[in-house]
Image 1 (cartoon, rainbow, N blue to C red):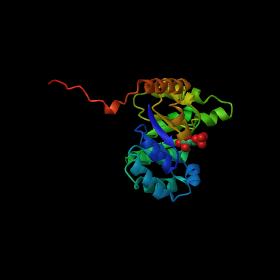
Image 2: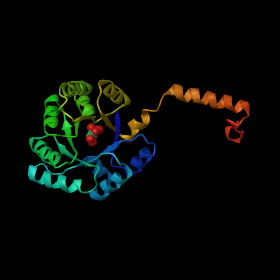
Image 3: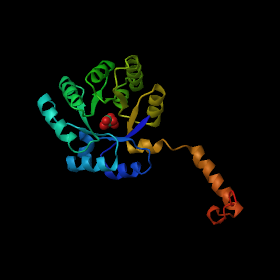
Image 4: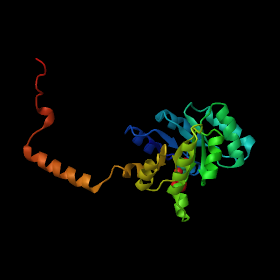
Length: 227
Ligand code: E4P
Protein backbone atom coordinates (compact mmCIF):
# COMPACT_ATOMS: atom_id res chain seq x y z
CA UNK A 1 0.00 0.00 0.00
CA UNK A 2 1.30 3.44 -0.91
CA UNK A 3 1.23 6.21 1.69
CA UNK A 4 0.39 9.77 0.68
CA UNK A 5 0.22 12.65 3.14
CA UNK A 6 -2.88 14.84 2.96
CA UNK A 7 -1.53 18.29 3.75
CA UNK A 8 -0.15 21.48 2.23
CA UNK A 9 2.18 22.08 5.19
CA UNK A 10 5.72 21.94 3.81
CA UNK A 11 7.36 21.42 7.21
CA UNK A 12 5.26 18.30 7.77
CA UNK A 13 5.89 17.11 4.21
CA UNK A 14 9.67 17.52 4.58
CA UNK A 15 9.64 15.79 7.97
CA UNK A 16 7.66 12.79 6.69
CA UNK A 17 9.57 12.57 3.40
CA UNK A 18 12.76 12.19 5.44
CA UNK A 19 11.39 8.97 6.95
CA UNK A 20 11.42 7.31 3.53
CA UNK A 21 7.83 6.18 4.06
CA UNK A 22 6.12 8.76 1.88
CA UNK A 23 5.03 7.90 -1.66
CA UNK A 24 3.08 11.04 -2.55
CA UNK A 25 1.08 14.06 -1.41
CA UNK A 26 -2.52 15.19 -1.77
CA UNK A 27 -3.65 18.77 -1.33
CA UNK A 28 -7.06 20.37 -1.71
CA UNK A 29 -8.26 24.00 -1.79
CA UNK A 30 -9.06 23.97 1.94
CA UNK A 31 -5.55 22.75 2.83
CA UNK A 32 -3.99 25.32 0.49
CA UNK A 33 -6.06 28.11 2.09
CA UNK A 34 -4.83 26.96 5.49
CA UNK A 35 -1.19 27.02 4.32
CA UNK A 36 -1.59 30.65 3.23
CA UNK A 37 0.95 30.31 0.42
CA UNK A 38 0.98 31.04 -3.31
CA UNK A 39 -0.50 27.85 -4.79
CA UNK A 40 1.83 27.42 -7.76
CA UNK A 41 4.98 28.05 -5.70
CA UNK A 42 3.74 25.70 -3.01
CA UNK A 43 3.05 22.84 -5.41
CA UNK A 44 6.41 23.37 -7.12
CA UNK A 45 8.20 23.12 -3.75
CA UNK A 46 6.26 20.04 -2.71
CA UNK A 47 7.10 18.38 -6.04
CA UNK A 48 10.80 18.96 -5.35
CA UNK A 49 10.58 17.39 -1.89
CA UNK A 50 8.48 14.38 -2.90
CA UNK A 51 9.19 12.70 -6.23
CA UNK A 52 5.91 10.71 -6.19
CA UNK A 53 2.49 11.97 -7.32
CA UNK A 54 1.49 15.36 -5.88
CA UNK A 55 -2.20 16.19 -6.24
CA UNK A 56 -3.05 19.80 -7.12
CA UNK A 57 -6.73 20.57 -7.45
CA UNK A 58 -8.40 22.75 -10.08
CA UNK A 59 -10.42 25.66 -8.69
CA UNK A 60 -13.11 26.02 -11.36
CA UNK A 61 -16.13 23.83 -11.89
CA UNK A 62 -16.85 24.24 -15.63
CA UNK A 63 -15.18 21.97 -18.20
CA UNK A 64 -13.37 24.62 -20.27
CA UNK A 65 -11.75 26.39 -17.32
CA UNK A 66 -10.99 23.16 -15.45
CA UNK A 67 -9.18 21.88 -18.53
CA UNK A 68 -7.14 25.08 -18.83
CA UNK A 69 -6.29 25.00 -15.12
CA UNK A 70 -5.44 21.30 -15.27
CA UNK A 71 -3.09 21.80 -18.22
CA UNK A 72 -1.50 24.77 -16.41
CA UNK A 73 -0.99 22.86 -13.17
CA UNK A 74 0.48 19.90 -15.06
CA UNK A 75 3.24 22.19 -16.35
CA UNK A 76 4.54 22.84 -12.80
CA UNK A 77 6.36 19.49 -12.57
CA UNK A 78 6.15 16.00 -14.12
CA UNK A 79 4.84 14.51 -10.86
CA UNK A 80 1.83 16.82 -10.59
CA UNK A 81 -1.43 14.89 -10.50
CA UNK A 82 -4.33 17.11 -11.48
CA UNK A 83 -7.23 16.74 -9.08
CA UNK A 84 -10.74 17.24 -10.45
CA UNK A 85 -14.11 16.83 -8.72
CA UNK A 86 -16.33 13.86 -9.49
CA UNK A 87 -18.86 15.77 -11.57
CA UNK A 88 -19.80 15.31 -15.23
CA UNK A 89 -17.53 18.25 -16.12
CA UNK A 90 -14.75 16.86 -13.94
CA UNK A 91 -14.97 13.45 -15.61
CA UNK A 92 -14.88 15.06 -19.05
CA UNK A 93 -11.79 17.02 -18.00
CA UNK A 94 -10.26 13.84 -16.64
CA UNK A 95 -10.73 12.03 -19.97
CA UNK A 96 -9.00 14.78 -21.96
CA UNK A 97 -6.11 15.22 -19.51
CA UNK A 98 -5.60 11.44 -19.20
CA UNK A 99 -5.50 11.13 -23.01
CA UNK A 100 -2.83 13.84 -23.01
CA UNK A 101 -0.75 11.76 -20.58
CA UNK A 102 -1.49 13.72 -17.39
CA UNK A 103 -2.18 11.81 -14.18
CA UNK A 104 -5.62 12.72 -12.80
CA UNK A 105 -7.02 12.18 -9.32
CA UNK A 106 -10.84 12.25 -9.34
CA UNK A 107 -11.84 13.47 -5.91
CA UNK A 108 -15.00 13.78 -3.80
CA UNK A 109 -16.10 10.22 -4.62
CA UNK A 110 -18.93 9.00 -2.40
CA UNK A 111 -20.40 6.04 -4.31
CA UNK A 112 -19.33 2.95 -6.23
CA UNK A 113 -21.21 4.22 -9.28
CA UNK A 114 -19.07 7.36 -9.25
CA UNK A 115 -15.91 5.24 -8.91
CA UNK A 116 -16.84 3.24 -12.01
CA UNK A 117 -17.17 6.50 -13.95
CA UNK A 118 -13.74 7.68 -12.73
CA UNK A 119 -12.15 4.45 -13.98
CA UNK A 120 -13.90 4.76 -17.33
CA UNK A 121 -12.67 8.37 -17.60
CA UNK A 122 -9.06 7.13 -17.31
CA UNK A 123 -8.31 8.49 -13.84
CA UNK A 124 -4.95 7.49 -12.37
CA UNK A 125 -6.59 7.68 -8.92
CA UNK A 126 -10.10 7.84 -7.51
CA UNK A 127 -10.50 9.34 -4.03
CA UNK A 128 -13.38 7.90 -1.99
CA UNK A 129 -13.85 9.93 1.24
CA UNK A 130 -14.17 7.45 4.10
CA UNK A 131 -14.33 9.84 7.06
CA UNK A 132 -16.91 12.16 5.58
CA UNK A 133 -19.22 9.17 4.91
CA UNK A 134 -18.72 7.95 8.49
CA UNK A 135 -19.51 11.50 9.67
CA UNK A 136 -23.02 11.27 8.19
CA UNK A 137 -23.64 7.79 9.59
CA UNK A 138 -22.75 5.86 6.42
CA UNK A 139 -20.14 3.12 6.04
CA UNK A 140 -16.98 4.68 4.60
CA UNK A 141 -14.95 1.48 4.62
CA UNK A 142 -17.89 -0.37 3.05
CA UNK A 143 -17.48 1.90 0.03
CA UNK A 144 -13.77 1.00 -0.25
CA UNK A 145 -14.70 -2.69 -0.20
CA UNK A 146 -17.24 -2.16 -2.99
CA UNK A 147 -14.85 -0.20 -5.21
CA UNK A 148 -11.93 -2.61 -4.78
CA UNK A 149 -14.22 -5.54 -5.56
CA UNK A 150 -15.61 -3.88 -8.69
CA UNK A 151 -12.21 -2.76 -10.00
CA UNK A 152 -10.86 -6.29 -9.46
CA UNK A 153 -13.56 -7.58 -11.81
CA UNK A 154 -12.17 -5.48 -14.66
CA UNK A 155 -8.43 -5.77 -15.31
CA UNK A 156 -8.82 -3.01 -17.92
CA UNK A 157 -9.54 -0.57 -15.07
CA UNK A 158 -6.12 0.74 -14.10
CA UNK A 159 -7.39 3.44 -11.71
CA UNK A 160 -5.91 3.13 -8.23
CA UNK A 161 -8.16 3.37 -5.18
CA UNK A 162 -6.81 6.26 -3.10
CA UNK A 163 -8.56 6.12 0.26
CA UNK A 164 -9.13 9.71 1.42
CA UNK A 165 -10.61 11.54 4.38
CA UNK A 166 -8.89 9.08 6.68
CA UNK A 167 -9.40 9.81 10.38
CA UNK A 168 -7.52 7.02 12.19
CA UNK A 169 -5.15 4.03 11.83
CA UNK A 170 -8.09 1.61 11.63
CA UNK A 171 -9.18 3.25 8.38
CA UNK A 172 -5.68 2.58 7.02
CA UNK A 173 -5.41 -1.02 8.21
CA UNK A 174 -8.89 -2.01 7.04
CA UNK A 175 -8.31 -0.37 3.64
CA UNK A 176 -5.04 -2.31 3.32
CA UNK A 177 -6.85 -5.56 4.15
CA UNK A 178 -9.27 -4.83 1.34
CA UNK A 179 -6.43 -4.23 -1.12
CA UNK A 180 -6.82 -0.47 -1.65
CA UNK A 181 -3.76 0.84 -3.48
CA UNK A 182 -3.13 4.11 -1.63
CA UNK A 183 -4.05 5.75 1.67
CA UNK A 184 -3.77 9.51 1.99
CA UNK A 185 -3.83 10.67 5.57
CA UNK A 186 -3.14 13.69 7.73
CA UNK A 187 0.40 13.83 9.20
CA UNK A 188 -1.01 13.02 12.65
CA UNK A 189 -2.45 9.69 11.44
CA UNK A 190 0.80 8.69 9.71
CA UNK A 191 2.64 9.33 12.98
CA UNK A 192 -0.02 7.47 14.99
CA UNK A 193 0.58 4.32 12.92
CA UNK A 194 3.91 3.75 14.68
CA UNK A 195 2.46 4.00 18.19
CA UNK A 196 1.81 1.11 20.54
CA UNK A 197 2.00 1.29 24.35
CA UNK A 198 3.69 -2.10 24.53
CA UNK A 199 6.42 -0.88 22.17
CA UNK A 200 7.08 2.06 24.52
CA UNK A 201 6.99 -0.16 27.59
CA UNK A 202 9.24 -2.81 26.04
CA UNK A 203 11.75 -0.22 24.88
CA UNK A 204 11.97 1.40 28.33
CA UNK A 205 12.75 -2.02 29.80
CA UNK A 206 15.42 -2.77 27.18
CA UNK A 207 17.05 0.63 27.70
CA UNK A 208 17.09 0.12 31.49
CA UNK A 209 18.50 -3.41 31.23
CA UNK A 210 21.12 -2.36 28.71
CA UNK A 211 22.32 0.36 31.08
CA UNK A 212 22.98 -2.39 33.67
CA UNK A 213 25.52 -4.01 31.31
CA UNK A 214 27.63 -0.85 31.44
CA UNK A 215 28.54 -1.43 27.77
CA UNK A 216 28.71 0.86 24.75
CA UNK A 217 28.28 -0.81 21.33
CA UNK A 218 30.29 1.68 19.30
CA UNK A 219 33.35 1.60 21.55
CA UNK A 220 33.76 -2.18 21.23
CA UNK A 221 36.17 -3.47 18.52
CA UNK A 222 34.60 -5.66 15.84
CA UNK A 223 35.91 -9.25 15.38
CA UNK A 224 38.30 -9.73 12.44
CA UNK A 225 36.49 -11.63 9.64
CA UNK A 226 38.06 -14.11 7.21
CA UNK A 227 41.63 -13.45 8.27
C1 E4P B 1 -8.32 13.97 -0.26
O1 E4P B 1 -7.53 14.11 -1.17
C2 E4P B 1 -8.81 15.07 0.59
O2 E4P B 1 -7.86 16.11 0.55
C3 E4P B 1 -8.95 14.71 2.03
O3 E4P B 1 -8.62 13.38 2.30
C4 E4P B 1 -10.18 15.23 2.68
O4 E4P B 1 -10.19 14.85 4.01
P1 E4P B 1 -11.13 15.53 5.12
O5 E4P B 1 -12.48 14.92 5.01
O6 E4P B 1 -10.47 15.20 6.40
O7 E4P B 1 -11.14 17.01 4.81
